[in-house]
Image 1 (cartoon, rainbow, N blue to C red):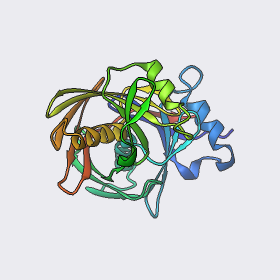
Image 2: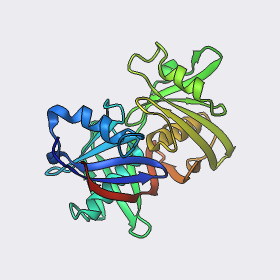
Image 3: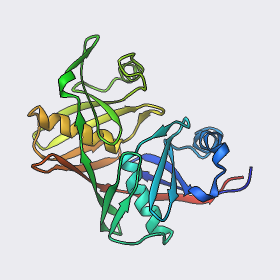
Length: 254
């Protein structure tokens, strides 16, 4: 396998290997992802992001090599990679994803902070709530499929719901604790990855669900293990996520 320049970034602990799409062997891309994302024999990451240009596009994979439409923490890291590599230093980036185009607005450089227009949630209100065993679940699509529970974190429950037959392609599972009307805490079990320190799309889905159910305001700070994300929901239901991205290291594969 040829040596490939790679960089590692994280968004509130959710970490990614990032490189240009043109650098990788497309026929070997899954094994490449599994190799570099392995935390014991590789660099270690929750996922891999590939950057295409003309037009600017984010291609995202989970650490197991499965493709995902988009990643909320990942798109902030994507924006910082584009800034660091002089791919695009505009204050406003229009990024193509499998979940549709996303617009990223840079708020500051040091620290690197961006506000992302995440678009609209596609909730499944006709199926709200879904009862899985003793668990009351709310599912929808915010750039990828998510299921929200207003329960304390439980990894076993997250795994079981993620792989439940109700979700033939699995689901991300978000455990939400309401602190008050403007403060939530959230932990996520991600499909194709397992427990993660943060999930941007999961935070958006969770806040949207809580807001729709009258459990929080339209502007919320969300506490995660490594810091906070801020979520705003416009009167028309459009979701905006504001948060940081940080570079960890750079190098080449062996």
